[in-house]
Amino acid sequence: MNSTGLGKRIAYMLCLTIACFSFKDPEPKVKSAATSYFLDVAFYNDQIIKWSGPIYVEVRGTLNSKQSAMIDSLVSITKTAIGKDKIARVPVAGNFVIHFTKTLKEYQAMYTEDLFDVPLGYAKTFQYADKSIRETHIFLHPSLLKEKQNQVLKHEWCHALGLLSHTRTPFAEENMLSASLYTTVKPGTAALPALDREALRYLYNKGIFSGNNRSEVIQKLNLLP
Ligand SMILES: [Zn+2]
Image (cartoon, protein in one colour):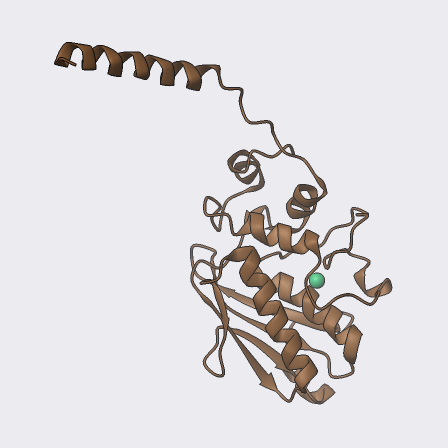
């Protein structure tokens, strides 16, 4: 083939490619229980707040082997949602610290916010100027036992990763951030419910950044509001 023939062929292929692009239907916008749940729980003052660097999970206090296995399973399930290099458990010097407090005195000493009710657990989050999370501490009330403790831990775990709000929408599927969580505790599985895993997957999408607002996120993820 001479060079003119090759040129024609390339030009023809280019036209075909351009035609394919111009006739392609736009991607349909997405709306599902998972996206509604994500949009309900992922914003704090209409802003995304998420980790940008690696998360090192450290546990302080006394815990038994079942509790330790629970932390390992949360780390592993979170890896599958946000990326395997994003989170790991470490023995010391973590930036994501879970405190298993033993006495009420110890718990109250750490609990500095002035709320009417002492909560069963809480997550205290520190941010950089760009709103990304620098460090977080989860505290669990010493009276919590077994399944109840797991439920509170999973709830605070979601907050500590950046799902900072609650939802009042009644979802058919199990989730950790319903406002009614503490009155409807059912025995859950060791893993995080699917709605929470999906919400973390959306939150840790590479195109989503701390400080993004709701309409920016809806546009970037091609969601239906
Ligand atoms: Zn909460």
